[in-house]
Amino acid sequence: MKRTVFLFRAGKNQYRLAVISTEVRTTGNSYRVLIGPGLLETIGDAIKEKLAPSRCAIISDTNVAPLFAEQMQKSLASAGFEPALITVPAGEHSKTLEQAGAVAEEMLRAGLDRQSFVIGLGGGVVGDLSGFVAAIFQRGVSHVQIPTTLLAMVDSSIGGKTGANTATGKNLIGVFHQPILVIDDVEVLKTLPSRELSQGFAEIIKHAVIADAEMFAQLNPKTASDALALQQLIKRNVEIKSSIVAKDERDRTGERALLNFGHTIGHAIERAGDYKTLLHGEAVSLGMVAACDVSMKKAGLPEKQGDAIVDLLQKFELPTKLPPNFPRQKIFDALKFDKKFERGEIRFVVTSKIGSANLSRGVAMDDIRAAVEVL
Ligand SMILES: NC(=O)c1ccc[n+]([C@@H]2O[C@H](COP(=O)([O-])OP(=O)(O)OC[C@H]3O[C@@H](n4cnc5c(N)ncnc54)[C@H](O)[C@@H]3O)[C@@H](O)[C@H]2O)c1
Ligand SMILES: [Zn+2]
Image 1 (cartoon, protein in one colour):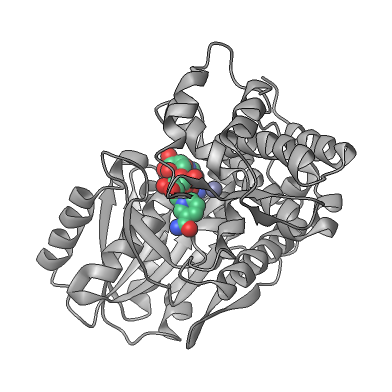
Image 2 (cartoon, rainbow, N blue to C red):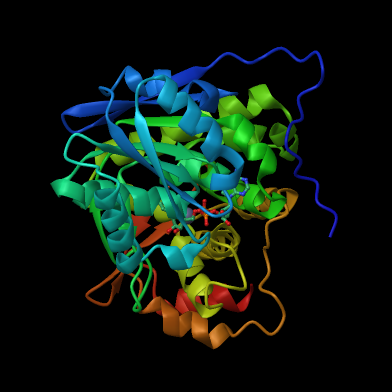
């Protein structure tokens, strides 16, 4: 399939973009998110502003480490740090308690102690795993997030949720552990496969639908080929996610749950496809199409706006129909595993207008079933 989501390429005479940043506030603390090109080259200096020279672990995966770890190790060493690189196999199956334990053992063997810290260099899998290890190693050490996928930059690196999957389901074990610094080097996205880039846009479209009508109107696949626009877009999305998280850091009041727009059905689709058929963002794209259908019926979302959301997903080459022969029944079986189904009561995120969202308790399983039927 011809793909139209291209990432920017630096022309010969293209000037270097300035680094921009935003501050994420947490209970009693805050951390900075730096966004710009070439940040990996100077990572040692950036971290030195926050942490005293010490041993640290760079946790990465087998795809990302060969691309960026050497450059980072050099920069860290020249700033006085002693980095130990720990590489886990790329993919979701590395996000387990066993892998976290093995990484912690390797850190101990490498001589890391209470003064050490952990850097996660990779996508959301490495971010969640390394954050979890940082939270439990010596009862908690500092965590620096270096996200290398668009999804991780705009979503998983922000908000402090860390954890692992279990045989029963995804993300069922974990802790809240906020990073002390997040560094988004936009140049690392140049090596990201286009399907991975598109799934990052699924979360960006989600943010637009639930919180930012203006961003929704401006979103365009061309953004991905314009370095400045992409940098600004990442910043805006970090701001949206962090402002929602700030209202409900521990996911208790329902405010943070708005970030689950498209995810109730999306997670069930992911699970029904055994996490192989569709990427997370692709399943969320389908989940958002279904959530729009529910929103039109139950929350007064105008049909035109529902259609505009589906159109935008298609523009970013995200699926809006289930693949042929997809086991639909398995989607319903999977829904009961969702953490959002509390005491059998469904808390479903709906939008009544692009740029806003709310939790509805008035959505029945039949509404969800009907929405999945049209996918
Ligand atoms: N903590 C949170 O709040 C939160 C939020 C959303 C998602 N997540 C988690 O994030 C994970 C998904 O993250 P993801 O989509 O980034 O997946 P991922 O970490 O598996 O990365 C996707 C693939 O891209 C490769 N890759 C990463 N960066 C690359 C680069 N620059 N160039 C080339 N290849 C690269 C990886 O090796 C992997 O094969 C899931 O485990 C999900 O549960 C967590
Ligand atoms: Zn998601």
